[in-house]
Length: 387
Image (cartoon, rainbow, N blue to C red):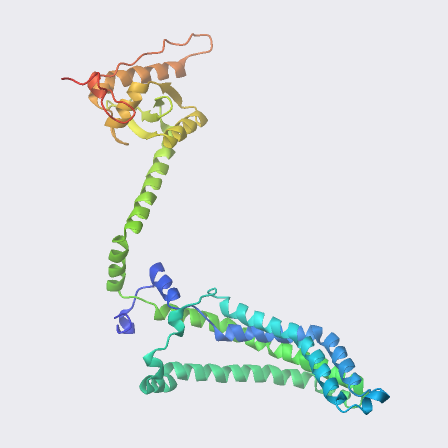
């Protein structure tokens, strides 16, 4: 259905899921011109810098082909054996060059979007053998664009090559009056340097082609608004996606909650299993508010932040559990806990206002109503339940 949708209706950028599915189908960003540029530049550069060593080795191999021992002349198979040895020696010199060429070709191909293998990409398709589809590819707009690109490539390469020959024309002519060995060496050096400079045109072409291929790739994968809505519904229906979203939401909520701990006036603890951070505005008549709460690891994190920011920690197990199980983050404490919490906050404020020569105030023992006493599992105490 997506393939049948007119391209002009696809106005939205592809989503991450759409790009992932295209990758699974073998549709990735590729630039043939980039691959050719990397391969050509690397191959010619290798020949240019290693050509001197390879040239001397080849001269040595060919020279041996014209030298025979007296007893070898009368052996009928000696010529064949000598030829096989020369071909093997010459071929062994090419193995590193060929391996470098293969490596460069692979690197150039996967440079933009990595390595991808997909059976769907190599599976036979009826559209590939359909004559009408073939004619559309040959005479379509894309074919004209590719033809224009090819003409521009040829023109650019020919121009750079022509300029190089013009600038080195006197050097080439001078080689005809030079000793044969020096002429061959100088000619090869001039040709290889010219090929290396001319191949710079391929770099320019690749620099233009890569953005164009990226634009065409994204354009091909564009989606309609309805496709994005359908994809969103499909993803939201997957249990693992819902679980991941909820996990992320919990992590964000916990992080926001922990960011408020330094603003708290007191942290009431269990002392180890539960921690509740409270803040109180003296200029307001509102009850103290819970800015953070947690148990286990989160409780330990709240205590750690409280110690780092000099927030007083008050150990009151029953009160900590009562607030934890009855009050949500951002809510005011219940009226039944006003007296107990007021005693704790008053004690903390008195500690802050003390001077060094004044004794510490008496530590309160806040009383929690029986109907708000919980155990560590959130169950009301069995001894405090009414019959």
